[in-house]
Image 1 (cartoon, protein in one colour):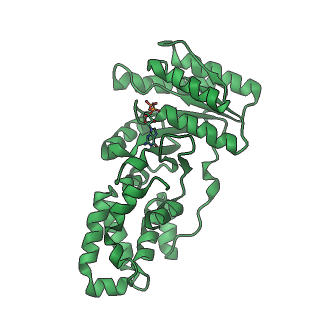
Image 2: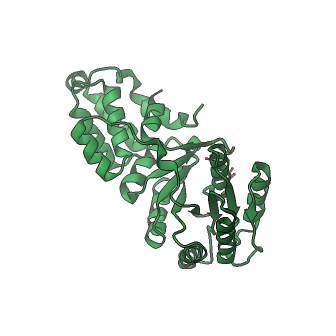
Image 3: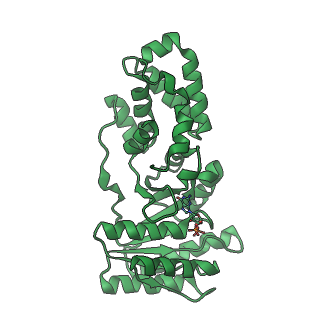
Length: 305
Ligand code: GDP
């Protein structure tokens, strides 16, 4: 029960041939390659990446189809430089598990309303407390009336202090107070919730830049991370949004939520390819435990379990 069953079903439409040698598939079962192409596109892997995956599979006649497919997909979930390296080696070497450790102490969390931003912040708090870190939250989405209350409830449940602002108040002021308090207390990690919707997109982007500047002023060198929360169900549209955010407030990581609700988990591939930003975590449910540190190999393995 890892929350990926829908995508797993989608990818496994070719299950009958997965145990065959690639050489055999290429000579006797060419329709399998077509089925595979269809399955990958339907899972939102994207055309360019799907072509590359099939190319990598064809180049591995000695492997079992499943193994070739898993290696090729893992490759697609790695940033450019690693992709080149992996291809040269002909296999995917172990990936460092420590990449989810945030740089610095302040993580700004951005994303449009409804993607699961507030819930994800709660999950992150829970995750890092379990890692032995001290955590604070800043309820910086003062534009959505319920957001502050929602984060306050999570904070109480998880034992995490929450810096609140007034409803409709200045989000930058909340971020400034929280970043100042974090530095004074020596808390390991501060997650700053931000507005997900303003009167228009321009205002939202300006607001996020301002929050970023204010954090830097309160605590030079911070925020060490800017993570974008994306809803997997929104697919390509979400990706276009992500590009806009990335242009105005450069991202250092992405968290993809609601993978439990879609068969299109392949969207992770275009996210990595087109943004060039690593995926840090994936969300697979509504409870605090439903957040997994992202590991390309584990993710791909889970799709074929
Ligand atoms: P925000 O507006 O971006 O802050 O969104 P919320 O945190 O309020 O979440 C919106 C809805 O999505 C809530 O009902 C959450 O429980 C739900 N949600 C968040 N993450 C996930 C996830 O990974 N899977 C599922 N199924 N639901 C999620």
